[in-house]
Image (tube, rainbow over all chains, first blue to last red):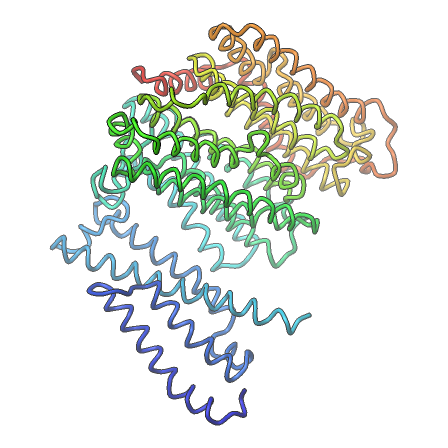
Length: 140
Length: 493
């Protein structure tokens, strides 16, 4: 669909907004509906949209497979690391109360980083699944 | 400081090792990480078991949210026993896996094998330690999904089909479990298992509670492969990579038995629900069917790994038979057989993995003349086979002994006789191995003389030695199991 000017222009216009919207859903998750999972899906959808219009090789240049696979692991590790941070600061595992002098601010800080981890992993998994399905047809 | 956090660390360290392995991507480094994580969990489990022996119950509030509101990790005599078994097998199989996985799994997928090994270990340990019914479901899914991948990594194309079969049936099992937990949650308003047990008698009058018990029992019976819900097991064990088979056979079904015990006795035990359903009769009938049919089917198998898989279904029958008896000795037998069958079947599958590596398969034509070409492997299988039969002096005898005692305690003499008689079927299928290995001339499919690589052989023989050791020194196995049985029957721990 690379030669369709309408799609190309609309795609180029929409993708930055999709990514910004993903960030909005991510950071507004504390106060309204949203959070890491939804934001991860939206940001992955932006890349998938890009791949549909400009082709899989172009998408693979933007988001290489190795990066996607590293994202899958890195997000989970970030989540686990937040748990260990609570442990090192003298609390239990995944204890957010000790992450700040004020326990409520500590909860806020803990869930913030956990949600970042969820964003990274969900986005990575979505793209990995898409790459696997989209890549299959070409190889056969 | 670290001692207070052992329940979390034993689960989290292998859980963290899995994404780390995916990041490093190098098979050798992945193996080293998996071994380190497995050994850490084993050490933590032993320390935890010592704490439980001193304190009775170790409770850990995840995220510092106090139970029953937050997720509690609750390790008592029963869960400590299961945790030690699972982490010991995990720690034994991880070093073994290096050579075996290198031979059976394609190079670019090897690091994923180790990531899945770590995830599976973390899931199984989490299932055994968590005191939260829904958290248990989450860990069950973590472990099960890792298992499906481990099985699918087998080199035979049929491994994919076996994995898919297990995926379908395992998902139904997990769904049934979560339906049961959902009903219990509606009834009691809590997900904490101990809290649930305390609140259940007050609401046990209506239909929902027995329905929940039925759903959980059916779901877990699928997961633990109770006859006739065992259909996923033989293919899964036969076609999975050898190291994965040994790990799963020794741990996965055992942890599911733990969950069944937990719900039948810790949650429903005190309430009147169990009187509404003929659970013991159902369990005993199905167990007998499992023991007799699966043992007979095992006799006719052409593949040694499949033979062992069917034997597993039969041995699970002995475990559920002990649960059905629900007497002190019966439960002791069930719990002690968890452990004894775990190490026996672990040893057998590890040794079978050596044969697969040397001969390219474990069909009976590969086994001919094994006593001469791989004398140590053949001897190990024979000794572990004796433990499978339940010959005195082996771990298997201890379980059968308590099972017979339990049957007599329950006044069922015919059942005691049946346990002894069905052991004779095990003699037949173990004899088939002995006949092929020692009394047959090596055929074309037999391996050339030479043992399996040294690390594999050492780990396998450690397990065989454990089968013999726990036949004599029963202070850990029977001691732990009888404390667990006392706990389940509501006595002082």
